Length: 202
Image (cartoon, rainbow, N blue to C red; front, top):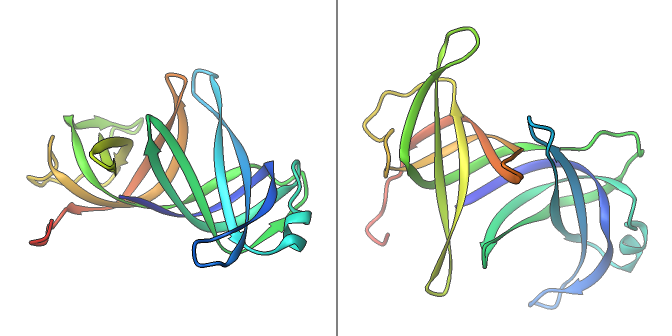
């Protein structure tokens, strides 16, 4: 499970249309893109599919090329090998000046399994230790499982038995995106981490 409360500023790449939910309520749907750049200079675009409450009046305002600010819940899903980023706006969508910088920032809540490489302990530029590890969350489409990987950095190292390969963890931290080996990487700077506690139904 990966959930994030985010603040976004981005350019509309797909103009808004009005759609209808399963319970018959109208909503507005549109697309945004945020440029990302890796340390090696490689560039990719993060594509967000955005939905919010609204009607034809709002849809007419949210035209392609407009820059908007959005607060909402970002869900990350994977199907047939492709990762989808779906943003549900908590409130309205504000059109802002074209000079406002691109951004996506917020807090991630993650539940998943630490990968087989386990947890590395490294030192930062000041010689202070930190932990680095990758973990995955599982999406299921019928009997097919898809894995979404997140890279974590923990600058308040935790000495615990669950900080190891194969352990299930719950993490809260700052959501970040980067470009790694020409692919978009989901990153998180850890604020809280604990071992996952399963109930009898899991």
